[in-house]
Amino acid sequence: MTSMIKTGVLMAVLTAVFLVAGQAMGGRSGMTFALVMALGMNFFAYWFSDKLALSMSRAREVSENEAPDLHQMVHFLASRADLPKPRVYIIDDHTPNAFATGRNPNHAAVAVTTGLMQLLGRDELEGVLAHELAHIKNRDILISSIAAVMAGAISYLASMAQWAMLFGGMRRDDEEGGGNMLAGLAMMIIAPLAATIIQLAISRSREFQADATGASICGRPHALANALAKLEQGNRRQPMAVNPATAQMYIVNPLSGGQIAGLFATHPPIRERIDRLLSLG
Image (cartoon, rainbow, N blue to C red; front, side):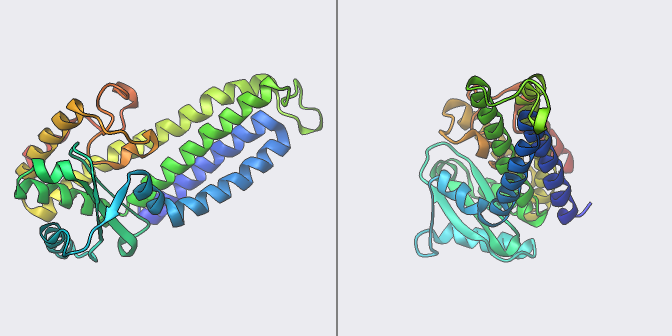
């Protein structure tokens, strides 16, 4: 399935969840409101999600003069991956982590924390950068961004419904297209859960693929495996203060300090990722 088809299917599924939730919570008027909001969110997610992600992460773009070694590595790996060189950003944070964002390879950016550059050796840092370039090459950074924006919007819609119920905004029947209170109550629980499950399924599967592609780009699966082990330890010791909606964009879970775990973890287990990488070597 091509990236464009995947993106289209994701947008359609999340929009459908959005519309069903709107109809259940507010009848025809609720569904109309949800449709307008969904269209706006899809437009925003496509064109501006990268700027929002970088801004929320407090990332700053750096020039070649400011970070010559980092730019050199990104340029070398982008050439190996047959990609345009992405913009380079640094996040002033002691916790080691990184992410990529952008709607396509021609409008992409890679962001790394200062802690990442201090912790890893050159081969390991190249492995992490190769992983992020793999996300760009596989064109799944747009899918991830749309999932985050739409899932957040569905949760917002459910929150609005909760306030509407408190102030009598939901009818007890379907007269004149009004939403059913029981259906609305169910959707307040189910809709955010469904959006989260979709988002997490995408996040987990794409990390395995990016690991394999990144190992191929840098040519050293063991270096990326070693980096993942160090990053997991670093994020467990000192989780990053990031918005949970952006957590799935990072190479390892920045909220590893117990805030998200088990079924609702945004990333597959590090041990499994390392084992798969070592099998490639």
